[in-house]
Length: 161
Image (cartoon, rainbow, N blue to C red):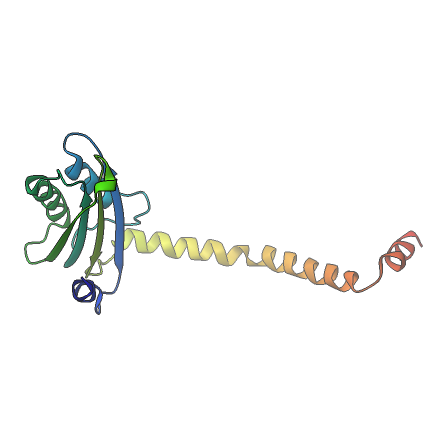
């Protein structure tokens, strides 16, 4: 319910959301794996302190299957003191499919290794070195904009002179 969503999202900082679907044997566990390893996620849910997940499935979905999905998710967050809240919805329109939605928040910021910081500084320098080329492009755009203000027949006659 909304109170659970508020609990997970209040003062949460970065939030990750994933959705997974699966059918067949191990459908709930597979849907959970798909939700936490979605290509849309930029990072892992490891270290999340608050996790809310919802399982939607057909009426024949067992609590044992939901428990397997919960184990997959809690193992992935790798935190014993995380606040994990889950919900279950039976939907006859799901057929044999199980859908799991995961929202994870409360990540600790991780310091970057010194090597990565050095590489970022080098990339920043490379970008600074590219600025003159960018300036040249902007300068040419200004010339084009000035030319556009002149009617075409005047521009073409001016070029032929």
